[in-house]
Image 1 (cartoon, rainbow, N blue to C red):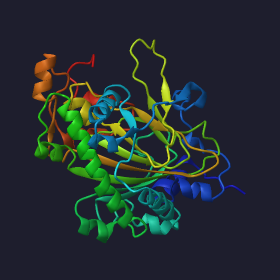
Image 2 (image 1 turned 90 degrees about the vertical axis):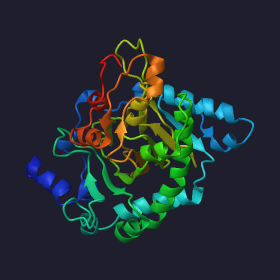
Image 3 (image 1 turned 30 degrees about the vertical axis):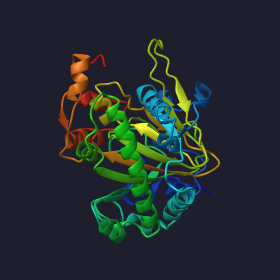
Image 4 (image 1 turned 45 degrees about the horizontal axis):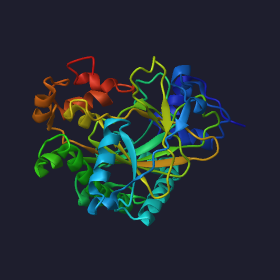
Length: 365
């Protein structure tokens, strides 16, 4: 018989405070989504209201050949429109990507007490956090997701503190994918008419964090979300999807008469998803679009995804690049310290691209 909790508080304690997560609920035999997870109707994801993104992946190996400029143009066009694109021949071996998915499943299939050692407050390092939902203490409706977040500081720290189930494979992924990130950021900064300065680029991607996300199979995926609508705060995000799907990106259409259009980003075997973060939108004075996205759960299978977030270092100041402002004649964003921008983002529940308001000067952007 499926369990029942006496109150919303007892469910919250079980899932959040005790570290059982959503997986703990599913493992108890929950046959329907608890009320605490039911999203308001306007936040639910109706597959009928979206269509698959039919843009093929970008082949990064062609950056080294005669088609270099064509590939650069494809990257820039994607950054200016959807803010999302997929890449193949990216330098991360396919066997490593498969090992990453296996490692994510291995970690989340641990007994709850083995995962709970990474809960905030007891974790062996402040740079590692096992949690559920985004900001459960502030959310009216919780997300159907558990995750572990690992901030990179050094190889030694990673090998000492990250979970044994994933530390080596995550570290290798972080290093290989970071090289690709540097190349793409260099291209995007260069196309703004700014001479890419390697130390500046390192400052923009100097903070790196890998999450293992776990979306347990959900009895009522139409009622809840795996991740609510949001854009990422950093510079560039690299995402490994498994083959199940459920990632949706909002199309920023002018003259859309208020109707939202969402595209599903289909999983492509061997591809990585790249998305533009708020930092690049601010640096480009709005030319590049940080992508608003969200995740739907599946009723049949548990899904994993592995994002690498590359962000400015905490003390880096981010604002529109001077060369871009000179060309535009007007700055749409003010300069802010990245730590302040992050504090604002993580201090609130997810709300689309509202986080950008923190840096906006002109509300028309």
